[in-house]
Image (cartoon, rainbow, N blue to C red; front, side, top):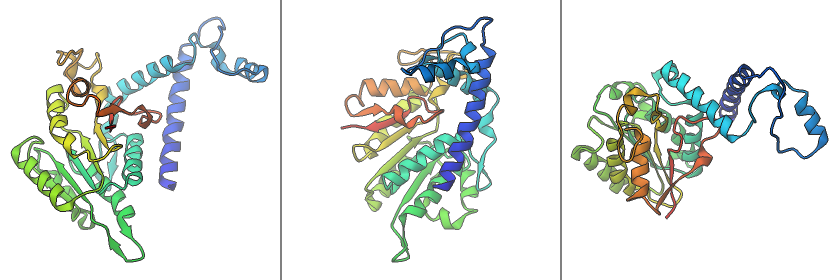
Length: 296
């Protein structure tokens, strides 16, 4: 809990600085009215006395969303996601999203994680380190069974995972494409043998719309219970300024990225069974509208 508080505080502090800087850069020459939900004259006076009173737009959900869009553009174009590691292994997950994932793992007592897109295996090691703690039975000094199944066409993850034998024993790495018959066979066998109670699915492989859609079609079956999550990662890549994913459109567009693949799934096979949970986007998430919860 101390780690969660520390990371959340640091991240919130950084966001606050960036937000304030952005607001101040939009100051007008005159002092307009700031929208506020306060109904007391005391609060109104306090607001008017702050530097925020001179910004030229209301502080509301629309403008906060604008800020986060710009923040993500900076985050992506400057490759900020390349600057973090976990246990010395390059870790591409946004720290705020990592904490949210850890909360889901713990709160739902997840005993099976299915991950597509291992990269170097840092996410799998992160999952395993969290799960090891809450699956440990202190009174019996034993570990309740759990497993992470992760896959990538690049085999390098195995080397990094093997650096940590304590965690590696709970990780199965598949050096094959996520929808290959080999990967499907291993996932299905693991699922059958483990008989998990709750499953968390992270789709972080190929981010093009069709690939995301195909992964959702297959892996949805493993979201066992109402409340379990499928996380479609990096949905903010479906941004019009992103030349890689928005040079063409797919599934009603406007881009050809993860958001389009997810939306197509929700409009068709996932309709009435899965829904986006905006509540998991605490402060900032690179997986905007990508936290998908089973509802039926």
